[in-house]
Length: 228
Image (cartoon, rainbow, N blue to C red; front, top):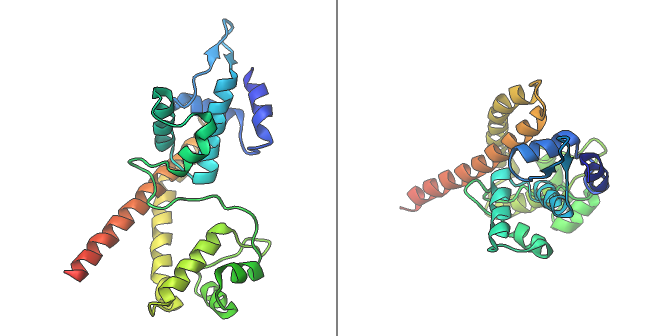
């Protein structure tokens, strides 16, 4: 298949995929389509399945390409799952830059009522989270699956006596980390080269994963000091 045919095949499942994105993944060594004598890329069915694997891992697990490549290498070497086991492989994907907790899919839209029902918290608790800037709905007023995990975590911390106003420190820290990531990624995203935005997005994934891992280790070290 030509790169245009591959794009048409994947677009329904991955609306944001572009020819630039496919070329970027090739440049990063995730796929290796053959080249016709004329120089055009020729993709096989296996190449398409490999692309689908990569795009699914990025969209649903928010995994950096380094981690995804580790999984693909395992498949190539026969030590990982086959294409029929991709879901299981993705669910257990870890690596040196894997996030301590998954940057999961945003999922379907969740109304405020559904958010309260699924988390079992009081409406006033959700209001307090919003008032303190910890929880923000989308432009249409809906939340996502990440919001559910956030509310559940906040409620669990509240059970230990941490009020929502105490949790603002976490928000301030997260915003500072995001600002640092933006300083690094923004110039790359604004570059004129082909695939500049794709490189910037991949950089954000890697830095965010490392940031979460570093934060987790720092908290663990600090907690050990407290216990000692």
